[in-house]
Image (tube, rainbow, N blue to C red; front, top):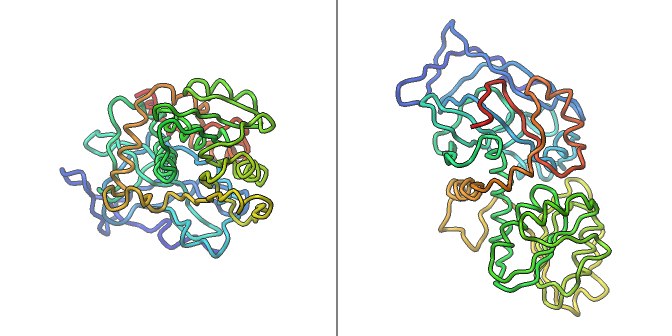
Length: 347
């Protein structure tokens, strides 16, 4: 598939005092670079020329949402999900070439820091409504967690956790830990995080959660959140759920088809298997909270220094094509932070 026609199209970006932008034909060009997946497991930084209307943002940092971006990078988005999996400001089309991502933090021309659901790119245009202010108390590297925190928030709304419930979160990756941290704030809850990697126990303890290996995971749980994206994790969720428990499936498997044991005692125990997906606001809050308001709440929730423990050491944007395979294969369960050479990631 050829590159989209909007790559390397000449135009000029004129930035008026309001901070919005307009494009017009001119000999002056604003060249930018963006990370594109150009084939299965192959990435490249490609030059583009900005065109269109929107707020001009200079990127400070971006984050990699490992689970989803690994599937995109490998070309494992099933054709039936091409439209559903489109990121708001992505470029190209699935499977390749595609410019994908949704965790960018940057500065507008007026100096304000904003979070935008935009792919990895050094400068970009975005609709004003999608530029969500980053609270002063949230450092730039931590702010890249906002998209994952928004997912965790939506999972928490779907879970409708009650005070005093016994909760199991399976998978101590970024989304799993963020979700566990929110559920642990509910009075009286007993939250246990389950993972095959015992080194993640300290992370769970920092958020007031217990930790267990899969073999030692407690049973008879009132609420189970599955976030490991593995068949074994989903089987464990069904096995450890108590009678009439809710199981929130927060994983997405791409083109894989996990075997789910819906025979055995699934019906006799009246278990409820509930899908959670961030594309729509949870029904519990839909109609009262917009997507932008949900993202703003997620950013406020990041005003907690404990979340820095979920961030990996930074990677330079210039190194991203070579580094991306290793970042996606990193088994530490941390968010990869991409920096753009502006020395502002200590904000």
